[in-house]
Image (tube, rainbow, N blue to C red; front, side, top):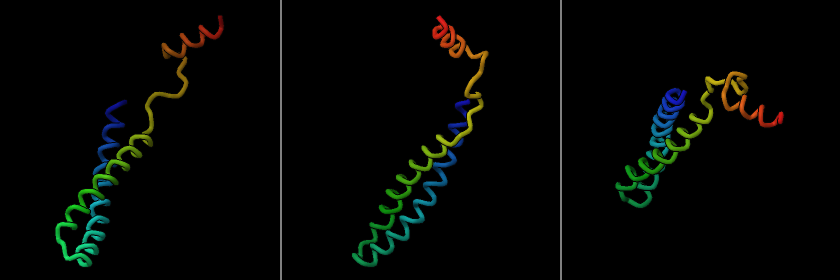
Length: 87
């Protein structure tokens, strides 16, 4: 169950890093042309890629489908909670 969410988060983070780095490259080139500082290109790529990768990784993990149904009558915690509310 956790492995599926971990793999989904990793895949989302990798895709997010790639998309964020591409956007960072465009912004970095524009900034480098304006300020004549070439260091802004890799810096912008790293910051944008890391930020968007983190956001995409979290979003992918949230959207992962759970293998456990929302209500399972054989689940221990569900049975215990229902017994407590019946008393």
